[in-house]
Amino acid sequence: MLSNLTIPSHLNPGDKVAAVSLSWGGDEKFRARYEGGKRQLQENFGLQVVEMANALKGSEFIYNNPQARADDLHQAFLDPEIKAVFSIIGGDDSVRLIDKIDLDIIRHNPKIFMGYSDSTVTNFICLAAGLRAYNGPAILVHFAENGGMHDYVVDSLRRTLFSNETIGTIEPSIEGWTVERSPFEDPSTFDKKRTMQPQTGWNYIQGEHAVSGRLIGGCTDVLAMFIGSKIWPKAEVFDKAILFLENSEDAISADQFTCTLRNFGAQGIIQNLSGIIFAKPCRVPIENWPEYDAALKKVTAEFGRSDLPIVTQMDFGHTDPMFILPIGAMATIDPLRQRFSINSPGCSFRY
Image (cartoon, rainbow, N blue to C red; front, side):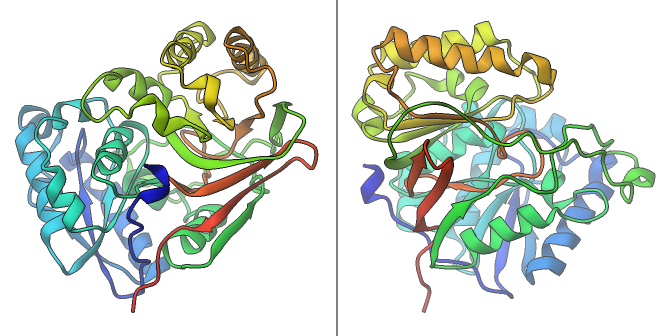
């Protein structure tokens, strides 16, 4: 299935992109933050941002009207002038869209959908419709980054969404990383860059041989919410894949992480993977990061995969800056050379 996904066309300057709130957000108190993200998106990439009908109606409306959220997604895909759909922010409620989305609308109107965190649900809705989606930046966060977007994010977006060339080697961010909170409702903070921590590098904790596989995954917390649903892939979809995982700002413990990993083993997923990559654990003290590495090594051993290449502390997910992961793209983990690459174009060519 991952090898047969429809690959959406790349973006060009001047294209229209839709902004959607599929789980949370749009509150008036965050409007200045949203407008800043919209402005940086337009200025950096020359895109025209179009808010869908319900995107800015506020979190109370968004929560109480899941069908309106689904309608926004449908309309964004049905509009031929819109070339991509970007999530404004994540949340924790996208699971209520699963039975409201018409997969045929997505299947027959392929275009870029990008989000992370709770947007993992929508990424897997696209997967169920046979369309590649992208685990990547959100408008209220990365596009609205204090003091301007991180170069690392801009570069990843250009290589992944504005090109049909092979993405190639992905390096750790030389800018460092941060999880420092930025008040979304306080415009006086928007020009103040967040404090960056020194780059720790990526940790190749297991594996002796280079492996390749197609990318699939998302936010660990969110994946656990829809296992067994109609959009959850059959175990064979994960065969020979590279599973990517990241934890949300809720900072699930290493024990909770272990439980989800064991569920993947119980489904027969871990046994047939090519590799696993794991992001820096968000809002977890750095001295506790080894607990997550230990969980990965423990559970893969429990299911007979002590040989499975694993890379941790990577720059995606809920730490900033992040690189984009196109679902279904071929990637390679080379533990000996300590190299990770995406060996496919992010998008297809548009005439």
